[in-house]
Length: 389
Image (cartoon, helix red, strand yellow):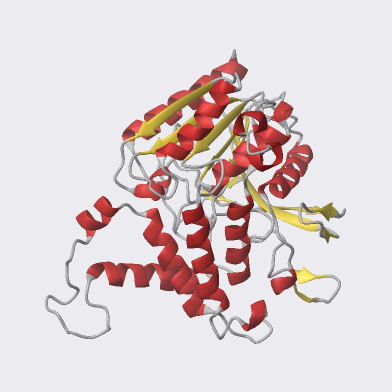
């Protein structure tokens, strides 16, 4: 929802300006894939643009591991734009003059939707480590509930990168009649063993922090800051490419001379520590949510239910797909996107694939890139013409 901007904010003509989060409270049980049941839950979401008369212009944005509902525009309490603001807004790739865009915070996360920091009605204490495991399939169920509430029977497109791209695939598999296009960016049909290993190291860093207290750190009025910092440093390291790190930092020293100790000496060390510190303190990301999100990544594997046959898993998809990868992304390499593309082709589905040149590694899907922007925008324009005709 866009509101008038106060005098101390100045926005460009292509900005959404100030946006206001909204909350959907669902007072009915939600049985999760893991077998546990949430007696009720809430979803925090934002909308941009206007839903047309037949609700045919709606686009769902699925966020990645540390993302949330705030995909575009600004909040009145912060000068930071939404995490995909470069691509969502008036006259941008996802043009809010034409599309009604919905960003939703997944359950299990820590940005307002029900998660580990929420109060467990059975104990009147924060769920903490008692919050059940969640999967992409669970998120699709809750997002579909939100769509029902908003009067959206079918999304024009469901769009997401990384873990968000896995949600897009799950949407297309589980509810094939409820989306016309699937936009899968910098994603994979399942994690590699190496990626699962990275996630496990990150989890161990958090769980071994003495301030973690078995996940009940809130009850101890503390925070596993060091563990979160290490987890984020490792994650951030895998999001960047070797070439970018070489170009950006090389072996540049922070002070100009070697100190021959274990303090920060190289600029790349300083950068990683800064990113870890910011994530653990300023961004205030909940440690239990971080554990849950990485496990959701690990669990995603739609082919598993089809004797590891990805073609069979995708055989019931009805949506047309756009699959995008980035040349320097080694965490979710182009080869993984090609697995999805080839399986869709073999299943007889309509799919467009492109590999975008970028030195920014996995983070490239979040960052400005003229070719990516033109391609993305052209595909979304074609979708817009379908309901504008």
